[in-house]
Image (cartoon, rainbow, N blue to C red; front, side, top):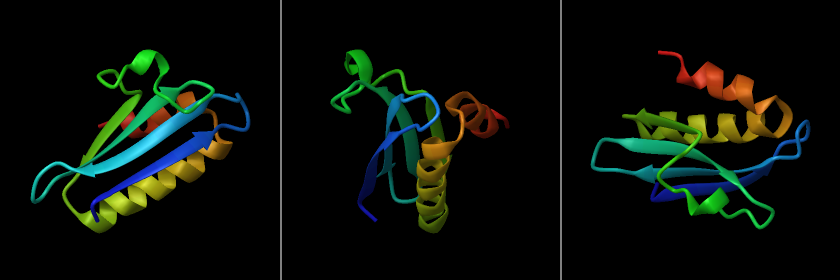
Length: 88
């Protein structure tokens, strides 16, 4: 897996998000969610301020996290999704 990228529009709020999963090094994968504007560009080009960042050690786990975040952000309230994944 080289990297995954999805554009998501939340049905409840109409807000748009970018979900990106990249391979940081040989054993670490990072999934980040960015708030986006109408054209699905990060708001204010703030790549340094994601809404959520999660790291995984397993490629299957990173892939599952990416797909789960994509599905949940489409239908659930975004604040709740971020709260669920921010907890330790």
